[in-house]
Image (cartoon, rainbow, N blue to C red):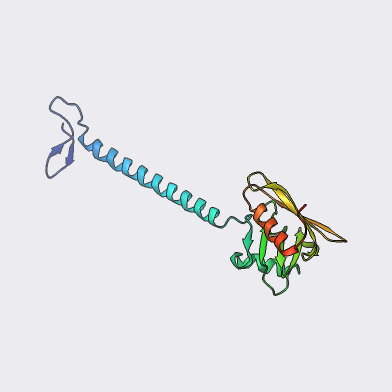
Length: 176
């Protein structure tokens, strides 16, 4: 007894010698292959988009105050680390890039905060400024006046040298 793919057209999947032909399985296999490739493409596109968004929003890189996401400034104001002013420079050095620790420059003053609390402030004019490390390996910038020293740690390629040059120019101090 012959098996038919389409009862009205009498298209059989069996060959004359009783073997089942694989013509119909080719179409199913091709469709499955297209579905797998399409699904894989969607997954890869989603991962690429996610990575691109993370790289453009790199939260630990040194940033201008106007480039900071609004929620970061809102949190700083809620913790009373920042008033209504906008920082000229901002660097988040918290472990989870959540803004709970960092350094910023606001109108000639370096402000550091740790775990949502202000750690200290140093007026840059006349302060000593020092650099430890470089952009490739990370390091830190320290600023010291007569009463306090603030350290701002940086990871690899986060802009430690740029931050140092900006603070040094603002301070007018001798290089250390």
